[in-house]
Length: 144
Image: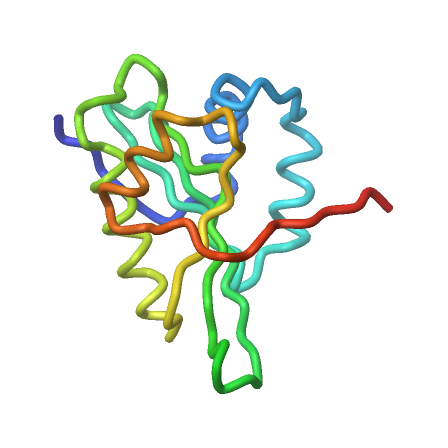
């Protein structure tokens, strides 16, 4: 499968929203996503898409987090990593993660952290095969 990966532009937002709404059972609206994409468009917010025959079938969001701390260095947090269900098991996620790793290296990241919901067990298998390991951290959140 000849999937082409690239950094997304505003013209890709509808395809990203459609894919993520399907994969994560979300209800993101196009207009809101386009507005936020344009508002937050900076070098540390990177959206990667995989296209096949002009349609977005894969996506990952990278948030580069530069720090002043030696132990932590600059790292990346990945989320909304997904492949359209009918294209899974073709190593598309692995190829996309290779592209993501390259982008992260170009941003001087020393580590990639991946946030994934607990119910996405098949995705976790893919991440582990790629080399991700669960660490001793717990992701805490609070609504504000």
